[in-house]
Every structure is written in C-alpha cells, then in structure tokens.
Length: 252
Ligand code: ADP
Ligand code: MG
Ligand code: MG
Image 1 (cartoon, rainbow, N blue to C red):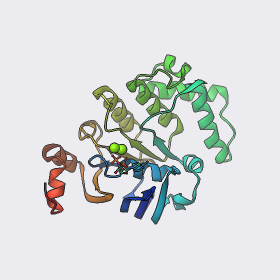
Image 2 (cartoon, rainbow, N blue to C red):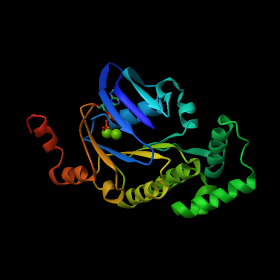
Image 3 (cartoon, rainbow, N blue to C red):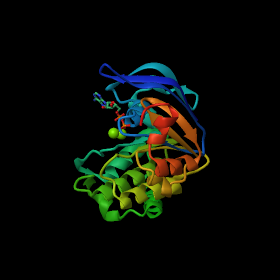
Image 4 (cartoon, helix red, strand yellow):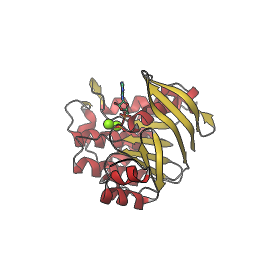
C-alpha cells in the first residue's frame, strides 16, 4: 500500500528526515515511536503534503501512485487521512456539515454522486454507534469549545466516516490524557480492516497498551534505527530511549 524509500526532508535549512525506509501493507498497523524532536511529526506532515517541508530526496509510493506528486487535497481524496495534532476550530460550521462536505468531495473525486441525505444519515448513525460519539457533539461548530477527549472522538469519527485507506495519527507529546488515548486506541482497533492500514505516531508507550501494532519502529534523529514487533514497545517502556542510544554507540 505504502512504500517509503530513502525519504529526506528539511524545514527551512534544517535537515530533519535523513533517509526513511518503510513498507506498509494493507491490513497492518504500524507504530512510530521516538524521543521528542526526532522527526515524527515531520514525517506525518510530509506524507500529508504540508507545504512548509521540503522533500530533498527519496520516494513515496501509495497504491502505485507517486504520493509526493499529489497535492495535499488529492492525497486526502486518494484515501490518505491525517489526524491533526491540533484540530482546527471552524465557528459556524457544524461538525456534521464539515464531514458531509469531506465525504462528498472524496466521492466526487472518484466520479460518484454525492451521498443522498438518507444514506448519509444512516452512515452517520452506524459510525456514531461504532465510535461512541454523542449526537449533540456533531451539531456543534467544528471543534469549538471541545474538550481534548471530544476533539479526539470527533477526529476518530471523521476517520470512520471517510473510511481512509491509510490513516496517520500523530499524537502530541503533551496534553493527551488517558481517556483521550483510549478513545484513539479503541477507534483504531475498531476501524482496522484487511483493506486499510494505519500509522500511529506516538511518544508514549502507553498508547500501545491499547492499540496492538503489528510493527513498531523507532525514529531517532531522522532515521528509523530499530524495527520490531509489539514487544519493542514494551522494551522501550521498560528501558526508555537510552537503550537505543547505547545500541547506536552514543553516550548516555
Ligand atoms: P517530533 O514530532 O518527533 O517531536 P518534529 O518532527 O516535530 O519532531 O521536529 C523535528 C525537528 O525539526 C526538531 O528538531 C524541531 O525543532 C525541528 N522543527 C520542527 N518544526 C520546525 C520549524 N517550523 N522550523 C524549524 N525547525 C523545526
Ligand atoms: Mg515534538
Ligand atoms: Mg511531534
């Protein structure tokens, strides 16, 4: 599904990603972990196509297409979903309308008719139940005055409605309480299917107590320095990131 080869990127004059290699297949959940400043959010932003980052080398292929050639909105329409670390607030636009627009944009891109009101409502109900989101939240302005947990639930709901092929969840290093972590994790687990893939980016080992990733990668100084199964997350939990530095022969 996604093939990243020797990806390099910089912001302003600073080299951040120094050759990332990663293969993600349909049906898999991958976790990227790493200390603060290692380039995790940069990787997410580059995959989503945020313009402040300059790709200086390497390739990213998504379902056979050159992802880096696609405009950010076309990446979304192709089925890439990036959950933002800081969800935007849009006063005056209800969450429901925001999602309806997003869903219909994807359909239009695929040459499909917009969803009719009855079908949309039916899908809303089904997904609301799945991610346990309250109706009242959806009629409010997007993210306005939402608590951290509500924003997270809303984000997961958007993901459920959009049914992306590939979702990137970049979790902040701060401000996520246990409830919010659990919401994200349960959402990822429920939305997992053999046709989609998820990349969960986190500083926290704790998130991975709830999500069971198929693969765990450690990003350090712009490179994936170690990959393994879910046991790698437990090892990090136990030993901290220092053991990675030791393995790399750095002073701790
Ligand atoms: P992580 O998500 O792993 O904590 P980031 O990808 O956010 O790491 O950041 C990687 C590095 O890029 C850090 O050293 C950070 O200071 C730097 N960086 C991020 N954004 C900018 C920016 N807008 N200008 C300059 N440096 C930046
Ligand atoms: Mg950070
Ligand atoms: Mg980050």
